[in-house]
Length: 392
Image (cartoon, rainbow, N blue to C red; front, side, top):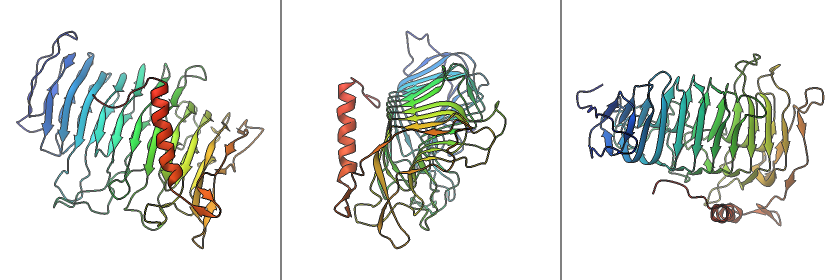
């Protein structure tokens, strides 16, 4: 922690502070904070929150060579709203860019109407018992998990695999909501793994699940993976556990649009009581120059007990639409919409009817036009539901 950190006294929620600071800040008391903060030290977050009292960060701009917001207070209650955050090149070879928000042992996290640019992670919640969980109406552009080369560019190492949302080793005791977020990663300008990952984390019950719905997730790939071994996805249920206290579970995944993935669209690869309903996956497999970005094992939606766990049951997939194209071993287009090796009536792992129309395939050729049309459909959906995304 460098000596340039500036601590601001909190205000009441009805009277936000406006420090207009160019330095980082450590928050040790509850209140509402607004302003502009930055960190030029890759080991110092722009904002550190170290209190159990309720903290609101709003109407702010953040930039950092390290993490943008670090929530370190055990039992923290944090809301971040209408914030623009930009991750900067750390300028140190082998070091990745910062996370928009990292929270450890938090109690309540809300992130809404924020815009994140160039971050390695969007919202990363770890080892938390959450009474409140809401991540909604955010925008993330060109996420980047490759390491800096120390000279203003990027290396080909990925020190850790980035995610837009990852919740790990946690429980949402009242359920949670991850919805109406827009993530767009541009080929050649981004690198990321799973965009939404639920890892050894569960909701409270089928009545109080973690709900992942109505998100637009475009661009799951990494230029650092050039040998067909990319493992990222749009939405992934993950983590090895036979213990129901720690296994992934009680999650609903519905009405999401997943576009342009090099690997998977939706993976129910771990857990119990997970429903994937009415999601759209449109991935044509190639970049704009006609080169394959999809791996030969890419799949639209999967029901696969990837860890051979006894805590894999009561899972359901139905209503998936669109279609995914990948190369076969000879480099020819191949439809790869669904893979369900773990269907089991005894374990209530069931796949209902799906509605793949394979829009990327037309008379034997694959086109990227359906991916562009998917974004147009998203824009129409936002307007029809009176939803807005990102910071104002």
